[in-house]
Length: 148
Image (cartoon, rainbow, N blue to C red; front, side, top):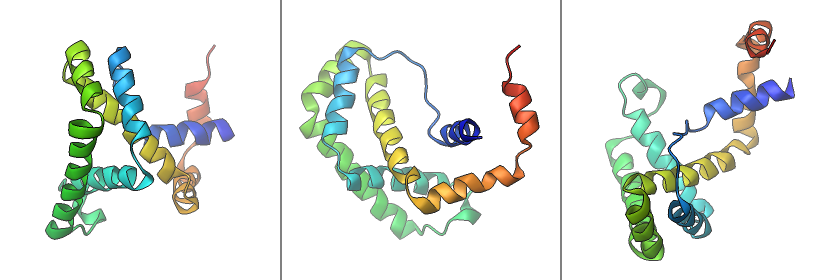
């Protein structure tokens, strides 16, 4: 049961690409992680959430106004500029030189993962996620996960 909830929660977090990152991209990821605050990570998730809410099939789930979306983008843009263009500029140059432009995406993917972990620890979020249990056919899921 606990394993199932853990897998379900993991499935709800950012889907990760499996492109290999080199040491320079790892250093950029570490720099970003070391230099972001909880507020920065929340700003990143707010930006992702507001972008997803712009999708026509998701719009009914949120009431993000165009003014609020702009405010969120300004905050996220400032944070990314500070991190990539100032605080971690040397690590960014090295990572892009070694791994190409995908390095920045991979590094921010790690920050997104950290941000989602922080949000998932909120009791209301955890309760909402675990609420899915009542609508899942556990026997079918467990049968699909069984290795023979």
